Length: 492
Image (cartoon, rainbow, N blue to C red; front, top):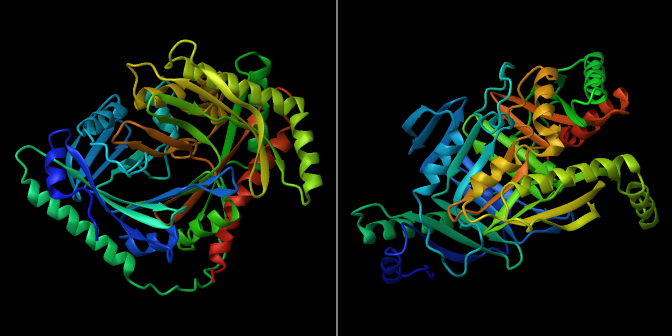
């Protein structure tokens, strides 16, 4: 088996950076990302990131990892850096995002030919309430799920599943510390690679998942309460405070199915550009999000607002009818244009003057069950800006807050009875190389203390029908609920 780089190459590379990826490649035509993940998952810290581009075609790479030498997590102002299962650093900060930025800045990765754009970094989530470190907002609502506000694992090793070539790159990122024995850390990396490959080569029986019984969801709003909240939001719109407010409700139930079976069901029912399974100790985040929050690759930054939805037609002709109907709906178009303008304004704060442009405008993107109006806004990042500046400028997504953002978020805090926590936040990665790819945490389940929570919202404008907006939140939640029901019923 070929290990890249060789030790002599590794030794030379150590003079150019302090983080060197060592990797091997194996054939994986008998595996899927799901089966490979099941073989390496340690049941404590693990992740699987997959993607269906445009809702129809597998993206080239899926990312898998298990175990981590370092975990970064926050709750309120308090942060912890956990190394090898023990809290190594902790403290309070008025800006936990800055602590994560500093942590990642310790790594100077060496670029290697043959590896994709992401081969290591911080994988995890930033909950919606991290916005309180971006903007000054009220802070009185309770956080009753119990998950950390943010949590990331820094990947020591990662499996990169090439869906096109049916190969897996097994990567071990070696951190070169002062006075380290290079031969020792290289040999350790090679042993780690061999151990992971050994796990992948072990046969694993496919276990039929037995029926687990039915869940019973409860909401954090009664229907009359939600309808009244919509009316209050409409009053704020009429008075000129805001153009739109995204009001959401949460649904919670006892967990009865295996979380990974729920993920398997969700990726089947709702294949999406961002599909993720994060196992972070007592908290699991399981989702299939259609929408990117923001993506940074080198100096190019992109946001891709989605607003406007119709069901897929049963025939090609019906599909085309729904598409025309969607593109001729003045309410849908007005909301979409507002969010495109919001995206342009967000990128304008961090990109070079004149570089922000709309690369796609009001195109239809088809998914398995629905179609959306989608636009793409792109800009070239200012030289003095990094991924964390990009995140601050674009978070949260206007599709989850409303506009103007700050006033809309103040109204959300007034109307919703609990903090949103992970819902409406971001799931994805900050790479060691300075890139970032974050999805919006929608169509997402949060599992904690044997309870499962999901949340869905609706954009409230002046002419909103309270009943219709209530039904929209129910309908958005139904797709995710269906995945839970499928897993509870048993997977064959």
